[in-house]
Amino acid sequence: MADTFQIIIKKGPTPGRVIELTADEITVGRESSNSLQINDRALSRSHARLTRTSSGYNIQDLGSTNGTFINGNVATGQVALNNGDIISFSEAVELEFHKITTSGDANATFVMPAPKKSDATEVLPSRAALQAELAKSDPAAHAEAHRTLFSRWFEELWNKKNYAITRELVADEFTAHGAGGQDIKQGPDGVAGMVKIWHEAFPDGHMTMDDIITEGEMSTIRMTFRGTHTGDFYGVPASNKPVEVTSIGIDRVVDGKICEGWGELNMLGMMQQMGAIPSPDQGPKEFEIETAITPEHVGEAYAALASGDMNNISKYWAEDMVWQVPGHNELSGWYYSRDEFLAFMGKVGEWSDHSFRMDMVAGRVLVTGDYSVDLTRNRGYRKGEPEKTMDIEVAHVLRWKDGKVIAGKGAIFGDGATEYDQFWSRSPVVTPPSH
Amino acid sequence: MSIEQNKQIMRRMIEEIWNQGNLATADELFAPTHTSPSAPQLPPGSEGVKFLVKAFREAMPDYHMTIDLIVADENQVVGRFTQSGTHTGADLLGMKTSGRKATWTEIGVLRIENGKIVESWYEVDMLSMIQQLNGTKQ
Image (cartoon, rainbow over all chains, first blue to last red; front, side, top):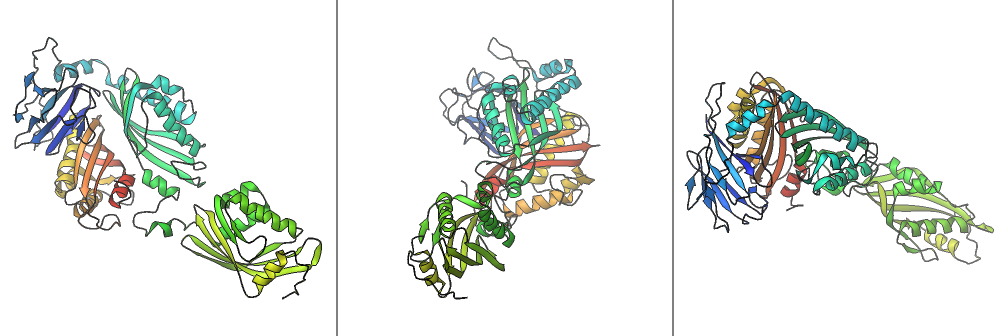
């Protein structure tokens, strides 16, 4: 079987981190464009390159400011790496190279690197010595300590919203990698800020720890979050839908505090559960996004409007909606917000002595893409002039986004337009009933 | 199984099955009873991973996976991966070939019994991958 190769960061921003080498070429440097980023000022932006060979890896300095050293010697040109070699980029950053040889049978052997003495006064402990040190402590007790730490983490922070616990459990230098695209800031406040976003979007949310796998400083946790989406979540407005999302995190724990974390979560599945994005195999976004709109939903929006209940109205009518009233009368023209639209509806009520009613012509709602069209019969009389009546048919074209009307306009048929203008005019002319 | 043996199974899965496309290794490493709660729609045993490997490698001829981190105990092994590929081949998960390149991360957990993978969990940054492939994110 083929040999495998690893680099262990001995000194640097993430000591103890193990990097499996599988790529043919690995660049090392301070910039994130490197395949191995080491964020230390001693490193150049592009510092060194590892290149796969038939027997292992070569390293080459890329003209860095501080140079690359192998076991204390300056690396010039391509230098072949041997098992146990110490690669240093400065006094602050040292890596150890490992070649792991396994036989083809099930009894794989792990070749320990030979202990090496560096020229420096400090003698680095060999991997064997480190493992012996680790074995002294009871692994079961160690794993149990990690389990206790993460149980508190989930119960106190995620489920009891005790944000102060992050100061106890998270190191100041904590950094997060991945996490489904979430931008998590450094340290306890960064973690608390991320969890707060979830609590605001899912006030009833609950996190469950499904499993924990511990090796040395590293623990992997599988977890499931369940909650109802009643607040904004990274720009996705409340859908009131139940959401269940699994995630896996790998955390490094030093001195009882979490100091580094890698995370992945099913953000895609979550967005789909919230109705925010379509599945990749389901056609163009604008047609997928409003499949939630049904003729019943349109009916509910009108019923909410008639109820006058602002909470109910705001579920169906967007705050920044626009509305166009047809005709050439005092009420005609554009209304540029929900408040303006409701003020218009208020005038309709007031001027008609609240006789104005709008009845949906049964079943006459058509929904396609993000548009709906409905037909209503609008009737009423003018306040103080009960003989001045109106009875017309109106079609409304509504445009929907996230379950709410964002734009609407009315179209009146036949002589209805004239009847409508006369009705809202100050003219005393009484329109003969046309129906 | 020892921690090192469990890690070796993870390394072989990534290197031989995913990076080299050697599907025979899948039959060797996965138990016939293997299931993945992360992808319950996939067939049991080694067929599920074979389906995924074929789909990605046929869609992205330069598909490559790197192990960034590996953590194990006696029963399970965890890998954090960075993968990349250019969508120049077959359609992928309903997406048309775009010629775009994507780089995305993943964490996978394998549960191992008697040297075989019996259960697996995956969380993949699919949202980022799709956004890179459909051009909505660089």
